[in-house]
Image 1 (tube, rainbow, N blue to C red):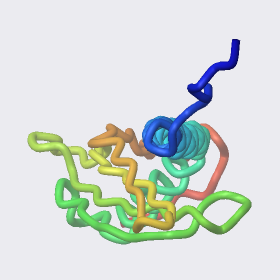
Image 2: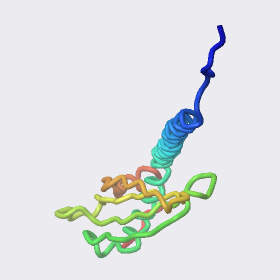
Image 3: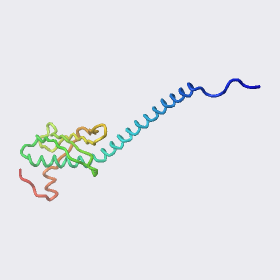
Image 4: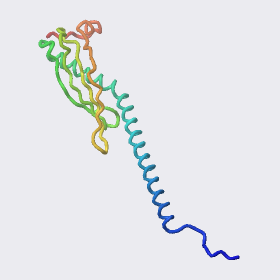
Length: 151
């Protein structure tokens, strides 16, 4: 007996299958893209947290230098600035500091620290909020044997 029907797929069935395959592959590729962006951001967050101690040390030195420069105006220690941080030179640290209200001695400073790194979609900023910094007292300077500055 001979078969009169031929077996196989029609052109419409092949086109539908290819369309479904394209839609599925597009979804998978977009997932890889999102995962790569998340991995990059996680890596930047880790690097920012590792750079934070260096940034706080430099901001504290700047606050101490400004406090020494304005020794007669205690209680009004304010300032801001920006500097490059890290070994790659990609990161910038921006800071804003001001005295703690009610601190008559002028040793306590609140520093708002933001680390910024350039990214393809624009700069990414990692804001660490206000961080307290305690400036060294005159007694610490005397105990270390450094010459005392007269205000």
